Length: 138
Image (tube, rainbow, N blue to C red):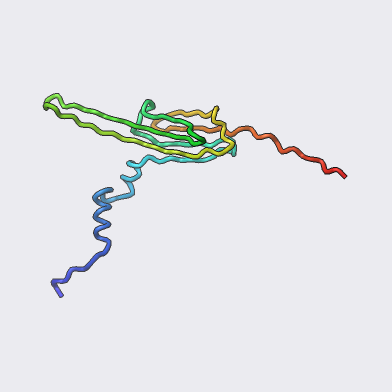
């Protein structure tokens, strides 16, 4: 029985996790994948926060398209090595989110601000008229 090897059905999956994410596969994933938080404040506005630490404000574009909030960011880096001939190092990153806006969203008053790598988009809700009470006649 000395020549038998114990079979581990999950060994290849664990090897792939280490290859893509390192030994602690939770930590790098958080830093590689930007997070997006979507929440409401006091039922008066929708807030979208996109954490984009590697993007400059000029890399980010915010649009409203057919009732959806569209956030796009794209960054390109190009580095040339002057000591070597014809060597160029290029990299690019991109981010894309499309979020359906509620019907009460006031698309004309949407504001976006970027601070310390966090894009905050505030979508205020329209003031809805108060319900009108109808008197019941006898």
